[in-house]
Image 1 (cartoon, rainbow, N blue to C red):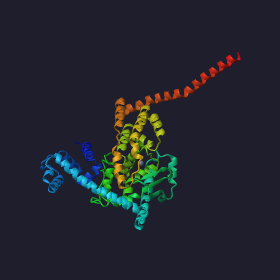
Image 2 (cartoon, rainbow, N blue to C red):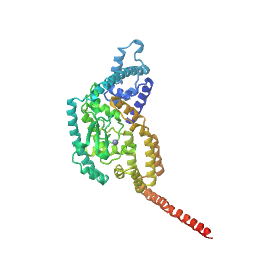
Image 3 (cartoon, rainbow, N blue to C red):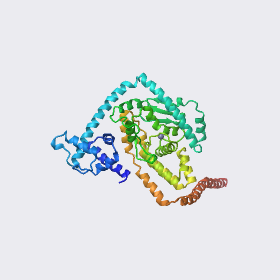
Image 4 (cartoon, helix red, strand yellow):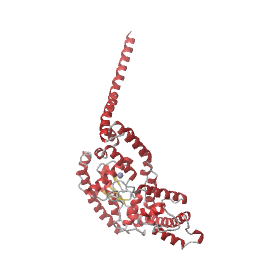
Length: 436
Ligand SMILES: [Zn+2]
């Protein structure tokens, strides 16, 4: 079983248990519950074969022993079924505790939201300073790396910025997400991060591994991380709000520099370009953003080449269609249009929601789980099959379809002339009859 299959099987299993006990988001707690050597543990768990034998993971052994010594005879773990029941029981307890913590925090948060302590005010000012100097550094790197792709107008605007600190806004945004508003070149950081991270800091696992990472160099570009993995990382690493902001800052700076967003495939490309940049220049980024969208962006990049997607990342939908049909083929543009449509249907419910507070984290994870782009992969596969393309053939195909597109356009420009001609003849005939 490879990593992906393992993960998938694991996800399915926990989705099943989640449904059974009607508690959403069990997975996040499962991760937190046993925190060592996840993959090995999952494999052994799936192969789990009671009674406990030499092969059984120590964590599970420990759990079973602990559980059995604390329950009545008829509840003891003796087979797979009773094992699953026992984990449900345990998770329920954990989750109830967590929900209680959340409720307490909500109350506390309400009390605190209007009066930040002097200490927090000072931290916020310091963070703003730190983030804005990184922001400036990132803008310089992005402008340099994508100098041929970023529209001049944006380049000039960014080169004229004197004070980057004015462009960092830390305020109440009713969400824990970060976002950019490219029109005024601003990046908005959520004030809520200060209270949410304070809540996360009460978890036992908070700060247990200062060197925790979400990826290796090999898995930096494509991986299965989600926002859930990111939150877990923030907890284990024991991040401060500023460190949390820093992991998302590069992606948001890409938007300020003209990389398109808001729609699914554009976010996929922005994230792909963010990670490529981070890898090349050794910059910090979470590598957890938009994993499903990134994978499709990556597929399209494999199909049509990196050069064209470097350029298209900074272009609008209309411009992308035009460039794809001119530089690649009519079919390529059509594939993009079809994919765009399917992805938007899946993505809209997720992106149009706000995710406030700790509950926001859970809601964000669950809403993202619902996104399914299976249909997109079918289209990409069909495209590959129909075109059966190697790189050389792709070039030839491009030439052929260029002619087709040209012909199509040719007809479109001729059509009004034909109509005009017919109408003129008609008018002449009417005049001729009336004169008689
Ligand atoms: Zn984005």
